[in-house]
Image 1 (tube, rainbow, N blue to C red):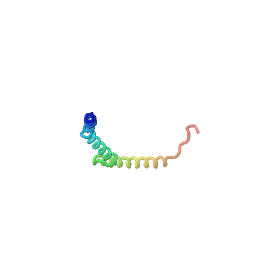
Image 2 (tube, rainbow, N blue to C red):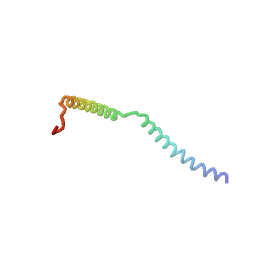
Image 3 (spheres, rainbow, N blue to C red):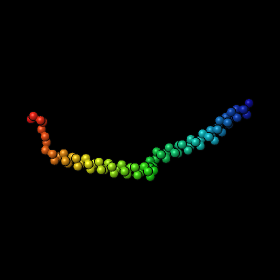
Image 4 (spheres, helix red, strand yellow):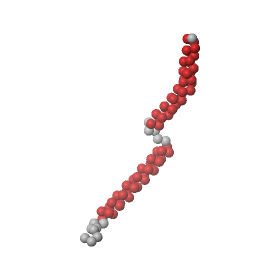
Length: 79
């Protein structure tokens, strides 16, 4: 009777240790590495391009603001 109970516990424990635990560890470390913020080279290049584009857009906005500040204020039509 005792031997049967040991087999009942040993089989699921063996399956867990052989299949589930290694997969669990691999997925846990992979997700932790992704959360650490390490960027791939492609992601870094995309980030550089986006930063350059943001700087260009900022310069355009500043130019537009300067042009709009130079325009004389217009009143309402009919005033």
